[in-house]
Length: 185
Image 1 (cartoon, rainbow, N blue to C red):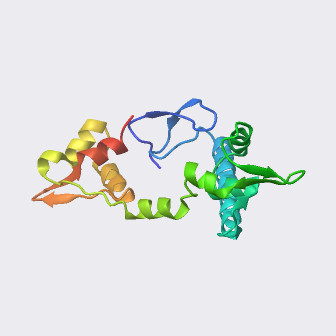
Image 2 (spheres, one colour):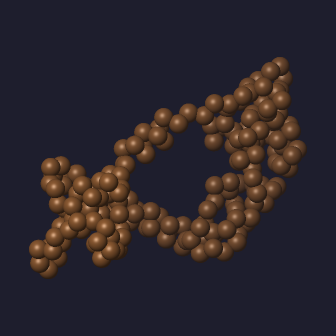
Image 3 (tube, rainbow, N blue to C red):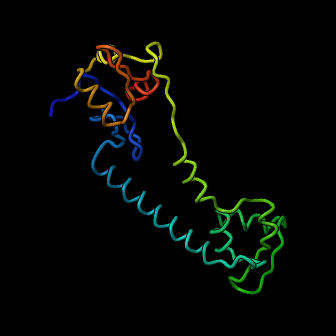
């Protein structure tokens, strides 16, 4: 595969080293960093799923919660809960070793429940609208000239990243905002 005529310098998200990106979507400088990021992402997904399962198992009418149940339901760190207990900002009972129970009503006054479903709905319902008038768009030739790449590469990236286009006569227009965002250095 031919290499691109432009170079994008990026910073690795894992190790922080600067590198020349081989593709527009490159985030990591090496295969080792990519694998480390994959493992980290999978671990976070697993922990997130476990917290969701634990939150689903907590009875709704239970007035006092254990520390583990509170962290799962309200997405609060254990250290934060213990600090609130130490500062006597929430009511609690100590029933013995590892048996602290926290008042659920006090937590509900301070914190919101874990918003998993709301986040997903927001992301799915987010619809972008574009103004595809010639003054708000680049032509394919303008894009190629401005960023120093070939026309076929521009078409390839437009298809790959689902960028909307509009054809008027012999010219194909793409929104400036999307193109600038795609080829930003």
